[in-house]
Image 1: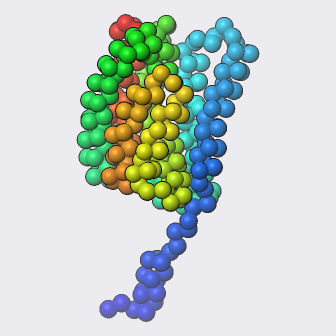
Image 2 (image 1 turned 60 degrees about the vertical axis):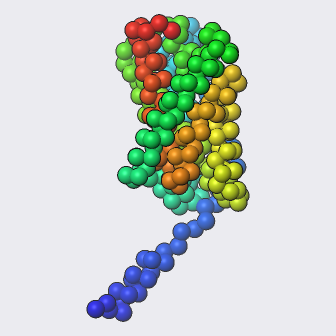
Image 3 (image 1 turned 180 degrees about the vertical axis):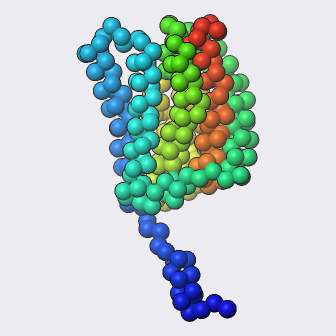
Length: 250
């Protein structure tokens, strides 16, 4: 039999308020500015302090990894300071259904991306069919440790950071503006593609972003899109690793 005190405590727990987050589209713009400015600052500092090492593996790693990780960290901080934290505000969790759905959409995305990449390469030409990350290892080999670090970032860490920014912070900001779920899916996919700042690859990035966004759409959680993104990135990351260590030609 439930006592009056237990009933009161149960009611209090059940009615613990989840406040409306006090961040929106401006938070995404701020986070994206952090990404761009940190990349610019790193490039400027390297050029000024050690111009002769501008193509070194260390510089390449720092310039690739730091801006993305820093932007994602700022996004998480925004949800802590002006919301309920990433678990609630960004739907950042990983359940069994997220893993299964993420794997399905990730494999679908991998197939679609591979086919789209073949078509895209024929259209733009092989000499132009290189991503920003791929360009880092086209002209010079990396030490094994640096190559493995880049592989793990492209495969596992980068997708987590990008999903936090685009299908976490940006998705939540658009939902707060009252956009419908399909409109949110469409706009986040487009912004995800354009925000990579690689004009030639924008159409290919749109194809990449569609199954990842669908994983987020159908589960309502970020875990599924993270898994889908990681699955989709595995083969490109492996190719970067093999080129970086000289096993496969650029």
